[in-house]
Image (cartoon, rainbow, N blue to C red; front, side, top):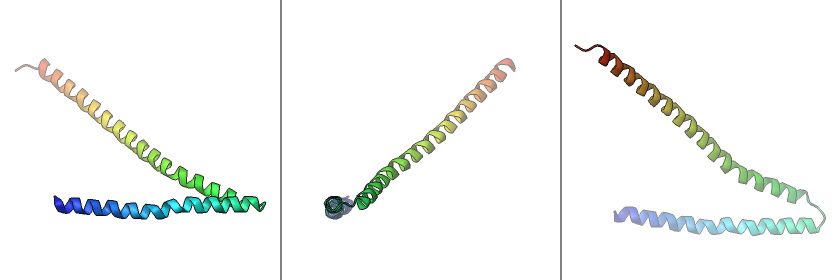
Amino acid sequence: MKKSRFWMMFLVLVLLTMASDGMAQCAMCRTTVESTISNGRNNIATGINTGILYLLAFPYLMIAGVAYLWFVQSKKEQERQFFLLNLRAKVAKLWASNPK
């Protein structure tokens, strides 16, 4: 128990230290965009904005794909359970109609 708690805290600490590098890039991108727009060139800004939109859309597409697969699988399971319920009802009806 203590060993797993130690590794969990260690993992959280590592992830927190890695996050500081990731947050610094946003300021760097902003500085790059501001400097290129002030120089009259906006092609770099357009590229960065396109990259941001691409990075934003991909996780949502993955979540939508998982949700779709989950929906299809649950629909199949629901149909299977409905089939088994009908089969049990038919078997019970046959048993009731043929008393011994």
